[in-house]
Length: 374
Ligand SMILES: Nc1ncnc2c1ncn2[C@@H]1O[C@H](COP(=O)(O)OP(=O)(O)O)[C@@H](O)[C@H]1O
Ligand SMILES: [Mg+2]
Image 1: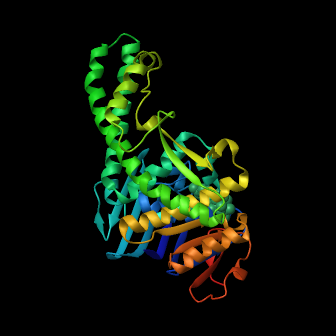
Image 2: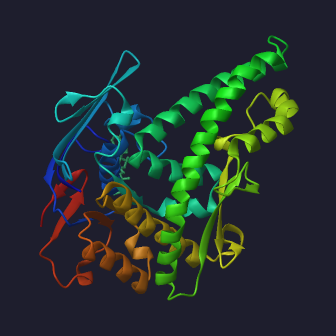
Image 3: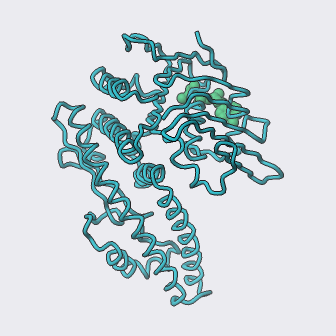
């Protein structure tokens, strides 16, 4: 799939933008703080009506404005698709309207899959170095884009979790009885185990792809493996009885849950263990190995989306190309070229030397929220 046209109105530091892109390679060159990441973020926003950065929707509107809109015209396997997101903050209320081909959608889940993206940005090193939440986010994002029913389950789980936590606090302060937990427990175990089972299924596809990419990137030197950890500790296998294991965790944590007022088991407590040649990559890997592994994961995500949906997603490379050594850079660029993936590459330095054939490349200079084609 590819994005042919993007229109921004009052988005971040963009006032009005209307730009046609190449179906293949788009390079955006500019100094710091000119709007490169904002542009990448706007394209990402089309995929899920959410940003990946820590920001609320009202922070995405241009300063002194209380609305923004993003309109993207794409071509995907279903033909032409127009996605239009309009946000407005009126009297402190957030209003967001999403239209696909002019028709307003009722649920966010209905947007998923129309514009799929894989983002690779410097902060992705947090997949290795960061907290378990970073690794769950990676998995949840990938699964949601190809399965809106998974996304709906996650939303439901989070709502139940909030309610159960509120009840735990009430029990802790003796304003409710322990027995009241039962009905929440059953629902959370059911839906929680569904979520975990889907994650395990997806990992079963993603892990071999990641391993293959890591071997390619390191000429067969490094073996990458990813394991799913229940409650950050116990390795889960596909054939495990997940419901039973969750019930065991529930039993173990019951007392502490009431004391702390939070749910201490479930998919929101799990983690991924990433191993390189058998060792915990987070603890023992070098900076270079972290970087290579993240690249391997990103390359695997491309293939995962292709296998699941029948088409490659749009690849967003924000400020990462200059950080890669020439072998890794070449492998990434070859992958993009061989598979005709549409990609957006932001950079502060000229990258012209990287391509012999420039026919499918569109280059833009960016300055203070304006894109200019040189
Ligand atoms: N809501 C907003 N309204 C206007 N400007 C913004 C908004 N959010 C961020 N900016 C500005 O956008 C610029 C950063 O853009 P960014 O895309 O991150 O730069 P870079 O080109 O370095 O990637 C900064 O100057 C920042 O102040
Ligand atoms: Mg940036």
